[in-house]
Length: 367
Ligand code: AN7
Image (cartoon, rainbow, N blue to C red; front, side):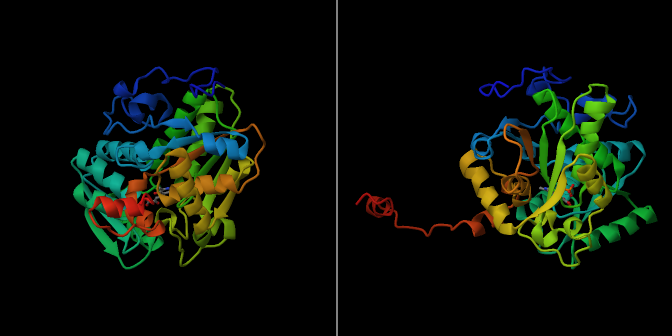
């Protein structure tokens, strides 16, 4: 491994030669690995090809090669774009004119954006008061019909399932298999850059679609495609106040500062367990304090601003003993600017000072 260039000397994958300037989005890049017919035109915002870079401070702390996969660099600022391009492309192909989803925020932002691109109506159900400001702004400005419900995400998803069954709109939550199918391309990109899968793959777990998707992606790309590469241990982390998979039971009133993963009854529960068990990984939990410590460390030591839920992956890494010298990837699922409220309530905002040289000098201890 060449630490300076951050590239592996192992075999490059299919798309490592592509410049970011000509990247066609995940459907065109990986069509042969996706469940989509060759002639269908993609509804894309050129999602994917997100940065994967070595985290020097974390590598030193863990005596390992730690890499960050920054999904905040997607067009709507989260990993949800990978699944949404495929879900909306296939909904459009099937003649659907409206889509609906329940969301803790990022799914609604992505659904609203891709629906607008496909000229479809988009309805989103979100938990009143528990959605980060940036995500709410996105859904509204992209033109979705936004319904804030007096209830949490789990309740919103129940209603959306009923709406789907009544046939009024296509559901674009991860219970729609196209979402997980698209999201698995994150694993392809990691293998394309590293030349292989990491030893450990850390990620946050909420509704558990993404861990299900990454595990499928690694298996498809490393094993089923005949590359014969070893698979990673899948390490998923829930917030301690919203950790149904760890507790082994539904959590009726989930609570966490990481509103994206404030979910008490994950739709892909079985997929998460399967990923952890068959990869010899685990599903663990991290406290809000551990999440916020990792959130600040990422910003101040790795210059990486992610949202709180994303920092759960690194919080999980920090508390887990791993084999020294291992290659580790942590997925940072969403951009830090999604949730400005958490940023400024967790870190003291300074009072205003007089606009004089003297008062600035006093603040800086120069007088
Ligand atoms: C930043 O947007 O569930 O385990 O409705 O936004 O696949 O649910 C978001 C989830 C991690 C958890 N990080 O992924 C939604 C929603 C961020 C997220 C997760 C979410 P899953």
